[in-house]
Length: 167
Length: 167
DNA sequence: AAAATGTGATGGACGATGTCAATCAGTTTT
DNA sequence: AAAACTGATTGACATCGTCCATCACATTTT
Image (cartoon, rainbow over all chains, first blue to last red; front, side):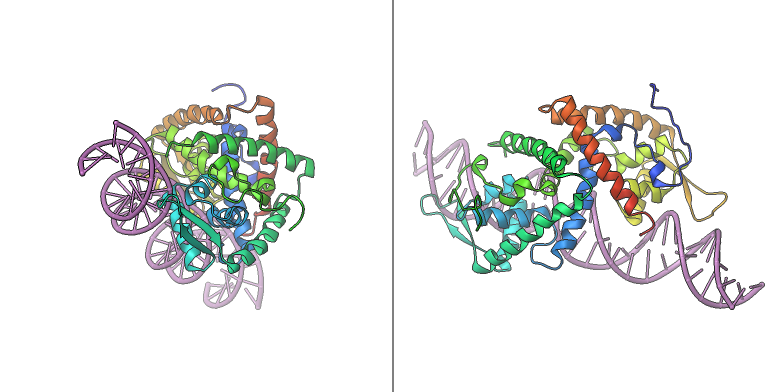
């Protein structure tokens, strides 16, 4: 047991007295913990909309909106999911009439994804809501927010690119 | 459509050409996306250990180690889960002989959690692995890492405390 | 002290998730 | 033309998060 790692408070009764130990210096812990809450927050904001529950749907909606004709595997990579998981999401969106899938002309294997009118409408509605999700972090300043976003964005792209080809 | 939001590249073929739109400035998006990868990374590191899969187990293991006699609901709150989800995790850990549950002397409703010898051994093994999880973020400096951790830690505690009482 | 209310922990049920292996259609290589 | 590869899909399975109900014990009210 090294310095600063002793079992200080034996029986804690309140959450705020908890000592997280190593986890207190572990970024992945905070990401994983906050992910739960951030997801709940977003789901609450999205209410009963057709894209509630799960990261993938919103990401897919936006990417297809921005890049009409984009391929499922690219959307999957950007959402950090594997193709099969994304296929299910797209299937769901298809059933809800949000997207349209066309088979590529040059390569018959790839699909080209497009938003339907309904999908476009939903996309802009959801965009407004996603912008509001900044409120969840109301207690940090714009500078701090931007700082964290910049750092995580960098890691995000590194990961996305590094997974290229593999899988 | 405002400035800077036009549909630039119509048909992207590579992930790195993707324009994330609003998501590119949305912290919750990066948290949710990175959560997936960070979780995969941690699961890989934990290999077949008895605490692989899921944030809860590792958190519970550490908290009980640091705070022998801690109550399930406190562990649940710190792990951002609800009591029933944590109950299942503790049940699992119990089955694996990692923890011991005693009923409180003063209040018969609350339980006091303790690590078994096996649990303590596992805890220190896992601790070493969790420390290594810093490697996932190898491309950011120690200062940047500490910066993000500080900010997210603040948000984490705000959320944990704000959920107090409610639920 | 009996009744009502509150609280901690569990358990059941349900839908959604992530993962892996298998399949299938279409493409490129040889 | 056969073999190897690639994009998308499906099935199966374990896990997850959530909601609701229940049980045991405590505290408060009357």
